[in-house]
Amino acid sequence: MEQTNFQLKKQDAQSHDEWDARLHRATRATREDWMGRGISYLCIGVIILVVASMLWFITSKGIATFTQNHVSLWKFLSGTNWAPDQGQIGALPMIVGSFAVTFAAAIVATPFAVGTAIFMTEISPNKGRKLLQPVIELLVGIPSVVYGFIGLAVVVPFMRHLVGGSGFGIISATFVLFVMVLPTITTMTVDSLRAVPRHYKEASLALGATRWQTVSRVILRSATPGILTAVIFGMARAFGEALAVQMVIGNAAIMPKNLISPASTLTSQLTTGIGDTIDGTLPNNALWSLALILLLMSLFFNALVRFIAKRGQLKNGR
Amino acid sequence: MGAKRTDFIATVIIDLIVAAVVGILVFLLAYILISGLPHVSWSFLTGTTDAFSGAGGIGVQLFNSFYLLVLTMLISIPISLGAGIYLAEYAKDNWRTSLIRSAIEVLSSLPSVVVGLFGFLLFVVKFKIGFSVISGAIALTFFNLPLLTRNIEESLSAVPRDQREAGLSLGLSKWKTEIGIILPVALPGIVTGIVLSAGRVFGEAAALIYTAGQSAPVTNFSDWNPMDPASPLNPFRPAETLAVHIWKVNTEGLASNAAQLSAAASAVLIIAVLLFNLGARVLGNFLYRRVTASK
Image (cartoon, rainbow over all chains, first blue to last red):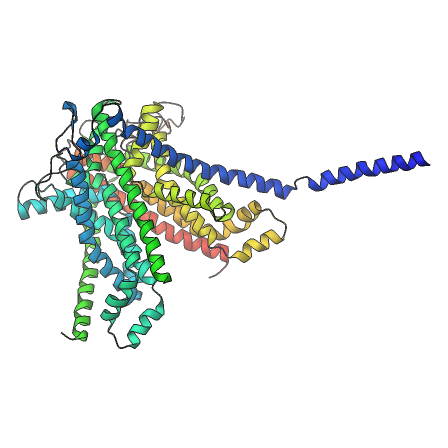
């Protein structure tokens, strides 16, 4: 009797263990979830790996000029003589060229973009949606080489007639970039104008302000962080644009003296030069240093956008 | 000057600005189509290019553009789908997720020439694959991933919570809910995003110059074995695309009719991109109606 009882107890314990195991075993749904989690983690991992290796490779290539070829950073940034074959690598002409076309394009494009955005949100939302939205989308869709080709076929000859010289130069690049960054700035400005609370506008109109007074003193004012962000995105695009600029700027690595003589930018120098140099030599490393400047500027624009977003939030919160 | 008068002047100025913007687009399209279309013929679309001068047809380039597009999409859609699902479903709101998001933002804001140079460094210099279709496709994938991922995440997150809860309450796993319920609902938005990104990939050139290369060796279009060096499907041959061709003809080409050639090629490129944009809209609307059963 005693023994059987013991046996029963043992059996009980056994089946208890078994049930326990069964109950704690993962169900099909859980296993599916593990698999799904695994797949999606893997995918995001791939992207992180790409970003990390991109930053790592370009940085390590870009600093080789300074670590292996022992060029001083200051000389690289402030030198005005770019002749890598003779060991002269002053990158200032390209840096100045890049900043010049970027700022010029942003300055020309911003009034157009803000005007268009005001039209689309405040003056005629209906026409804005039906007519201007497709216009902006088409402008975004036109490939940069086509912009470059039109720059080459229309803007450069036009400039040649207008001011003389070859027609290649910062001003032609500005024209091309202006059209290229226009849709970027417009779209984002529209978003930030739409985000302005309705009651701001209604309060202003109810006080008897005209539409323009409302737009200029209330709507644009409260959308300023958003518009700034839009302009910076446009500048980032202009700064990084390669082919369209390279086709119209003339590609002379000299300090730009005026807006109508051939100049070059970081991107144009990279596009023309990287195929002609041998890996590991000074001319090649110098080009990678230019790429590193591009990368750092892109990160800087990114950080700036974040900074403005934070400041904007604080202001709205107060 | 009265407030009314200022208001009137401001409105006129804004109208003029808008007219200028519309005018620019009309001019661009008209210029390309009018100067390019007369030179587009069947022999131009299917002919081969003279390797030295760059003159002649764009048959191989056109094929290369589509082939690269298909390969790029084959690689980038699964990865960005997984990544989009991660961000929409699994990612918790913590520092790690915000780090991942900023990494994607950084990737999307990198100039395409930098992406191309990275591809060049990795595939051509380090792995010694040479200028090839596959190098170009992977470089384009890098360029495409962040945009597609963000689009997919947004489409997935826009699906109402109820749908997600309904799936989970039926005992489905998160994964099954996402794939079987959420993804079909989000499909119209995702497809629109994919087709739009296809237009962008189709016109991209800066990322391809040093990865897919600037030469279009004449391929034997009767040979469809991907392993043969002369086959158009061989992923290890150099492949100049249409966009790269336009750039090449304009900067280094020796063709006497470079302007006509590039106008014609630009017209073809623009029409392709317009078709992608239109296709995105039509397909998105169609799928939306199919999925939501609304009219």
